[in-house]
Image (cartoon, rainbow, N blue to C red; front, side, top):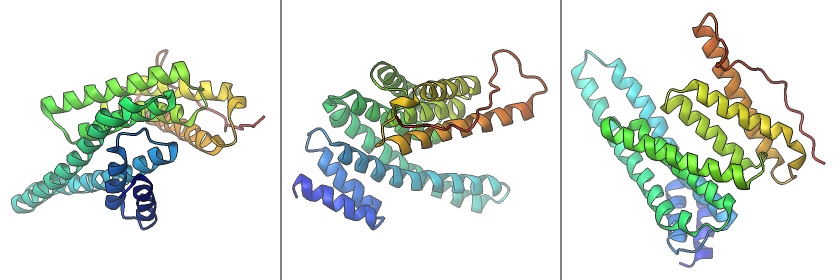
Length: 256
């Protein structure tokens, strides 16, 4: 099947919500070794995001059940074995994506936007692996995730507008990584606040095509900052100097 047919198959699979079929089609497109168009890149991302997202959600549910069955050895063993099955599926999907990124996508990216998109993806999928990893494996996945995010972040700061939705999405996910994986709320808040402030300062650079995506991500950044601040103020009586207390008025972006 040629490339155009595989892309069309992926679109049909997306409409049918058959994401395993969608990933297979977009994997075949990627393995042809030609740089993907923006549309193809987004189809690939949506496909894998859905198949891995389903496993991440399942893993959380079963992990919670496993913890609640302490004292009932048989039930706990069943839950543990099922969790391990889901983990194996999740790991296989993540390693599949990471292989495509390293072998084809990052190497073939000629534009800063594409390179940042793929490096962000690399950070995301190592982050997903780190959520289920332990011991030395966890440290490796965390380090690899941070390195990919940082590489993407450096390129985005140099070559992309602060209002670009890919740069904003990277800042959002990188801040989540600091908060949830590294347990560094100060750094998470600082990164998210900086991205939000820089975007607000350059709202006049927003173009109509990316307006909706950019303002949505800015809202998510702002929501995360508000939630993180609330959690932290609930946990401490006084938060001083280097801490993360800030509230924003609702953004009112205007396109010029």
